[in-house]
Length: 408
Image 1: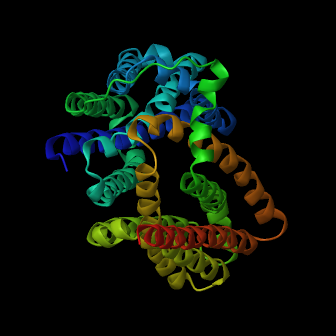
Image 2: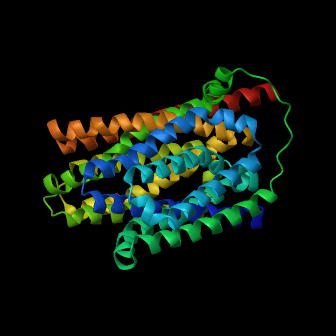
Image 3: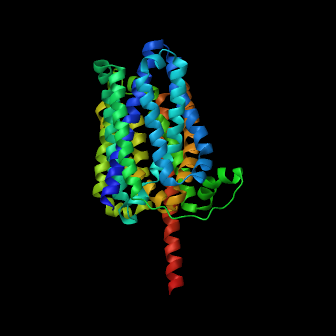
């Protein structure tokens, strides 16, 4: 592991994760307080989702035109500049809600183009044999700051106000940009022979890489299925579950979320401890993690015991983290680093689109069939994903056996 480049990247990515949460919380609370309209407040995530979708579709043109090292730094730099302008002109900009939404739209484009690049840095600064350890460290830190951000930003906004909280956010983002440029200096991108392609050819390049690689294709399918299952954790469904299944007050909604995040952090440390085993058994780790997660989700959906529900949420964290870190590492190992941004962008479009539709589906099921049915369906989807991963285990064993026969 290249110590200085990795840790500067680690600080940068963690700071960006915290800054994104603070920015979301500040803008959402401000819009709602000013307009008293949930509809207008909901335009914020809608604009972000739309911009991310368009950015994902157009990203291959951008990635093909500019070098990786320049682009990853410049997109974060532009984002920091725009947020600084928002801070300086906060009062005048926020007095016109549509101007504020325009700023949000531009920032969301920077995120949509920049996030696949950020996620592609890890294999460039970390040796293959330490990827699981690196992904575990990144997972622990980003999960921790996101929990802290969502937990305390509302309180900080009340105590400090929107403007000072946003100022802290801007400082954090500029520090992340500085560290990111330090990381980029250590990355040497090999020169590539430019291959002229049509616009359609550029757009489908990431999709082709996923489709033609059996492991990537299976992992992406698993991610899509689990993305559908992930919508069972949206706030509205959890609140209904707390009231109808656990027969508790709204405060238990917070307990459930806190328990899951605690489990995620514990899971991050567990994956760090088991890094060598997971590195050597990526597919098995994915399979076992998904299987345990599906079992815990099923029991969680069927139980009426509040304490058991919280314990199951904690147990889900390690199961999910082992699956997620193994899956992320398998993805990074099965595609050349220079192609990762395009593949991540394509995967993001697919998963976000499916997740958006599944949120509506889960809400419909909770409303007309019952909230327990949502978690039963979620556990079935996760179990299906684990079955798919077991086919990868079987396939890898067959490939090793064939290689052994050929060698002899």
